[in-house]
Structures are given as structure tokens and as C-alpha cells.
Amino acid sequence: MSIPAQSEPSAGGQPGPGATRRAERRWLLPASAAVLLGLAAVAAYAVSYPERMPDSVGQMVEDLTGANPHPVHLVRPPEAPLSAVATLGRQLFNDPSFSASGKQSCATCHSAEHAYGPPNDLSVQIGGAHMDQIGYRPPPSLTYLYRQAPFSIGPDQGDVDTAVNLNDAAAAAQGTQRANKTAGATPAAPAMVPQGGLFWDGRADSLQRQALGPMLNPVEMANSSIDEVAAKLEKSRYAQTLKQLFGSNLFDNHELAVSEAMFAIGRYEFEDKSFHEFTSKYDYWLEGKVRLSRAELRGLRLFNDPAKANCAGCHLSQPTRDGLPPVFTDTQYEALGVPRNPALPVNKDPGFYDLGVCGPFRTDLSQQTQYCAMFLTPTLRNAATRHVFFHNGVYHDLKQVMDFYNLRNTNPDRIYPKDASGKVQKYNDIPAKYQANVDVADAPFDRQPGDKPAMTDRDIQDIIAFIGTLNDGYKPTSR
Image 1 (cartoon, one colour):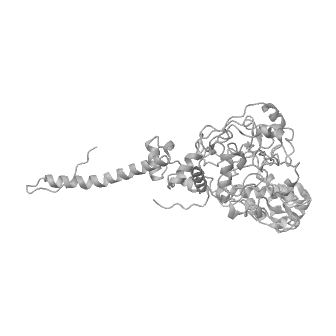
Image 2 (spheres, one colour):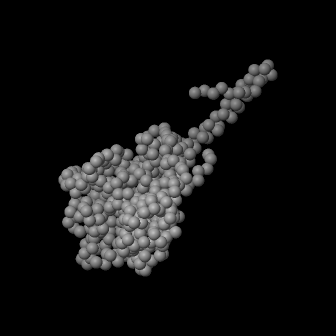
Image 3 (cartoon, one colour):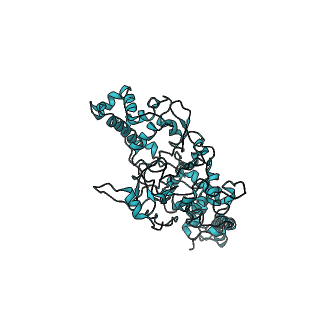
């Protein structure tokens, strides 16, 4: 492509050759400099990451500028004032008077300032009637649950009139080959593994039922019964509002009264924008409104690389076909084999094992041993703000988490303790008879001892940088 130069006229009114050459130089020098700078940037990238050289012009533009070359429109939940029921739920959520101690509310363990997760770095939280009981599992975040389906096994049943028997579904799936989870591919069909539900083991099928769990848990809010919770509600300053919303005879039926109060809490979590903001830097990058740094872009590419980190195999990173933002989980269950956490009092008993879907806190699937040691895959949104990870809280920063994924199979001696004879106690938080449930097929778990780990330390740093872009509250600036 040639661009005509504008040049000075000669004495006869026509451009002189000297003026034309000077104009050409004025145009060529800035262009040449831009090209040289661009080539230098690509060369530097190639030296550092030869295996990840751009394979398209669009990707090269992304690498050089940090912009998303294919922006999308994200469909966020509509904003509206809270309903009267949700407003009541917000009050109940933040009121500690419904605990046996009078000191613990839902917000105590699910802090709004910490993405509705724990506000500290304790492996598990403290509760009980006298605030001296130590819990079993760290509280998951309550954010991004508005799209969570009820617990199920196998393909989505859709609208059915008869409740599906989970044990029958599990028996039907017995022996089915588990589909590999590969970043960038269509999400694995849940023919064998469970999906959906709330808590680490999926035992609650709605926000309403999840809210009730801590109310009756002896190491949390520690009420002795539904009747005790109902009595507190009836004596509370919310009693009149509850009757106005749900009927003047509400407290004649204690189970109904508590159920409606928990429904109000669930509505608050569903309606309030703070539980699903979609205001992260990554959201704005998807929309083409901000640029990612070089490290964040490399981290994103590694996150989505099926041969490297393969994070997106379970933590889906792409918007849905109808434009819903990704929630960074496939809501399925995995047995990862994280090491036992000796800091948990419950683990002082060598015979105690937390086996997730098949017990001990969930009891309806205790005979479905193919699910033992499987736990729900949580969202990674706001994960960089957390200080406790996995179902037993064994890790306290993302570097430890990434090292576990990277080294579990190649260097298990760096992940697990050794017994008296020096033998590595791999999968030491799972009984030997259930260790076959642990995922060894999906990258990066498809390596063998002595193999080169899937990720370098720099790769891990870049992935952590990308995970930091998933924190809500980012303020985009005009470009």
C-alpha cells in the first residue's frame, strides 16, 4: 500500500523532488519505528515463550496491546431494588441473635468484605454455643450461586414430575467411564460424577436449605432444634414482618416459620447484586473495555491450555452461548487427593476421613463408594481474596494450591508427608480402598513420578496473576 506524500511546491508551483523526499521521510520514520518496536516486542516474547508464539494476527494484536481482539457482550443479572422478602433476608443474614451464642450470624463466616467467604485465614471457623467449637470444613463463598442447579447425578433430567432417586441414578452410572476434562472442549458430560448442589458435598439443593444448615450445626450457630430457631424468630423484631409477608398464623407451624425465614435469606442472596457482581477486570476485558498485562495474558493462555494447567477443564472460563458471564466452575465433583490437614481437631482421630459426597456429613449416598472423596468444584471468582483453600483448608495461598496441582504426581514427596520408614504417604486423607477415585487422567494430573512438571515457576506466577483478574470491584479507566 502506497500513501502519497504532501510536499512543498517548487518555484513553478509543482512539488520539488527534495520536498517530496522530505515528506516521505517524515511519514516513513514514525511508521518504521512502530514496526521495529512491534517486532522487538514479538522477538522478546518469542525468546521467553517460544512454545506460545502467536498463531494468528488477532493473537499477536492481543499480545502486543493486552486488548481482547474479539470482545463480547455479557448478559448480567438485571438490577432492581430488593423485594420486601429479600430485604428481610438481608436483616436475618446479618443478625447474630439467632445463634446459640448470640455472637454468630451468617455474615460472620460469609463476610461481604471478603466475597462472602471467611474473613480470616483460619483453616476452619469457630462456633458453637460458647464460641469454642472448631468446625470441620472452611465455608465456601456464597457468591455466584444464583445459577447453581440442585444436586443430581447424570444428565440433566429437565422438568419431571417424579423426583429422581439418587441411589438409582448412581447405580445406573456405576462403571461408566468418566469423561476427561479438557480446557476449551465442551464441558464433560456428567455421566459418572455428580453435579450441582450446595456445601462441599452438595447436600443442600437450594439457598434456602443451605441457610438452615449452619443454624442447626453444633459447631456453628448451634441451635438444638427447629423449635428453638422458631422461638427466636417469634420473639425477634422481625416477627411482625414475617407474619405480614407469610401469614398471620405463621408461627403456629414452627417448621413453616423457619422455612420462610430461610427462604428470605435465600432471596437476599439471589437478588442482591453483591452476590454476583461480574465486575472483575476479566469481565471488562471480555467486553473489550480494558487491557490485560503481559503476565495476565500469559496466565490466561496457560489457564486455558489443555496440555499445561488445564484449569479451564473444570473452571470454565468462556461466556455461555447466550452471553452469560462464566462462573469459573462446571459445578461437578472431583477427587483431588489433597493432603490431610493435621491442624483440624477432627483429624486427630486417625480413623476419621471426610469423604465428601459419600459421608460423613452427607448420609444419603454413603453406599455409593465410587464418589468417596469427591468434593464440589468451587468458583474461582474472587479466589485471590481468599486465605483458605480446599475442603479441609490445608492450603492458605494460591502458590501452595498451584504447587499441589503441579507436583502431586511428578513430585509427591513435596506434597505429602512420609511415614517412619521414609515412604511417601500419597493421598493420605483418603482410605486406600477409595484412592482409585482420585483423578489421574486430566492434565496436569496425567504425569508420572519423575516426569517434568507441567508448569514452570514463572507459569504459576502468571496463572496467579490471571486469577487476580477475577476479583470483583475493578474500576475500568477510559482508554
